[in-house]
Length: 119
Image (cartoon, rainbow, N blue to C red; front, top):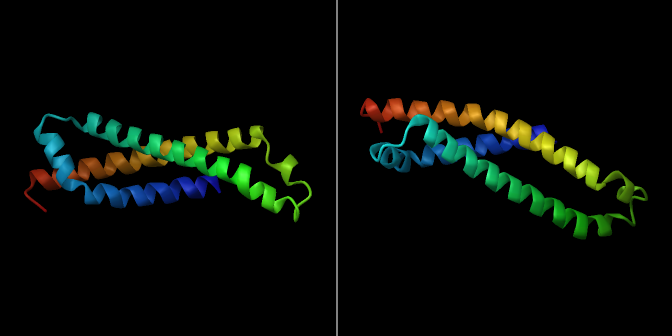
């Protein structure tokens, strides 16, 4: 599930990058390099996905787990802090890996399009 979520997030962020062509153009005009633009976008993704993951996990742990405990006897044992930590690590590693290549490809492609005069 973590791997599929990371790939889904990368696909969503690819759409966001396409919508931010003008802001990337302005950043490039102000002297932003490819690496700097990639690191800005990757940092934004990591921050957003980490906070979202932690908030969703807390909501699940506090609200949903109590509701589901009456249906599933071993739910409290199955979802421990160690499991959350491993899932978060796996999600983050896959997310960074997939996003790095997605962002790199899109930033460089958008710069080539801007330089050739395309919209």
